[in-house]
Length: 455
Ligand SMILES: Cc1ncc(COP(=O)(O)O)c(C=O)c1O
Image 1: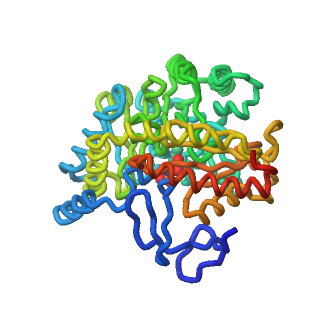
Image 2: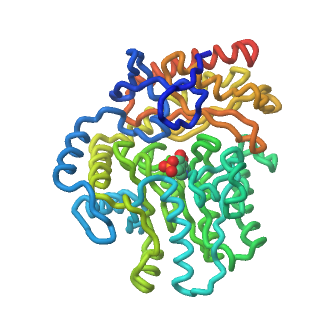
Image 3: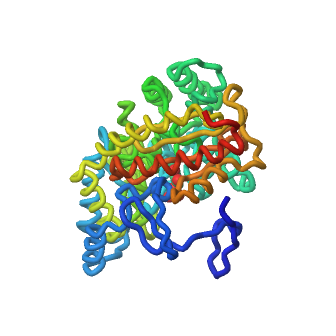
């Protein structure tokens, strides 16, 4: 597969053993390197570039905003861009999620949610023992220390473990590898929700401030989602034990799953919603926590009136203005509806690959789709970690001119290989055909080497 040559310059990259092609420019769903090679961005970076690359409408809008005012500090100033951006988000988010606290990315959003949940309880009782946030074993909520404390992926945590907060972890609604031998997604979802109640009772509800979950999982086990019973039960459990429900839509938000927010597939309203990525479609770093009336009122109206938190770039006019434009285009051009349509079309095509020996599971909603690879389809045995199967598939795709997002750790913490397929949401049917041809050729090539005969 592709050559891996260490880069030689002053950049501290993530991986010194990876050959980084140099990007020249991007247009629509395509990326072009400086040697003239074209790649389909089959994962929108990391499910970020929902509107594709090189959008000149956003570029012109950003230029005007920079000339007007690019930066002010949120603790001193308000401005039209931040007020408009917050209003649009409040209009797009479900229920009474009406209050937007701006940050600069996904990890800042989940960290902020932890602190907001804690302050929600200290406002009423400064001596409250409620502080723990329950999260999932198969989850990713970011790489800063608070966010990593919520994260379940073993490989991302392991060397930092001594620095992390010991938050409780419960099993995911991971039907393909469910630990209860459930035969249906419904049963798995019920068991996974019951696990939340068990964990709350184990620690004592008086010590739990919140429960955080992705509605559809991103990098930890891409594309898995529960039956609607899960969120119905989880909402009831959180209410019963006075625990805030925090939904992390950093990856799934803004149309990725064929609805504006993935939680709308399940018809519940969380207390806090974490957003980033698709919020600006990657045209500027931005994120937010959207608080319900209940949380906002407790802290800001009936309580101290001050949220003890903040970052320098949170709520800067430039980022808010760019995000506003991206959201305007998302709605105006019916991009969310397109994601649903093209997601369905792509999923039907992908299912034809499920006969290949190494393709264990294909799942997802809209254009947030995961493929999991196994050595043995019947037993679901994973490949040895030495094989680095998700890297093999990623490199084979790269050779075909397709970028996908690899991952691992979905089985027993360290085993398991998968890829995330998440192209820009304005992709056309013809472009889906091109993406599928490339992916299909790449997977068949790898399957011929590691998975036995192609069927
Ligand atoms: C669900 C989820 N939460 C949080 C994050 C962290 O976001 P960031 O990388 O912007 O800090 C990610 C990133 O992939 C994510 O997918």
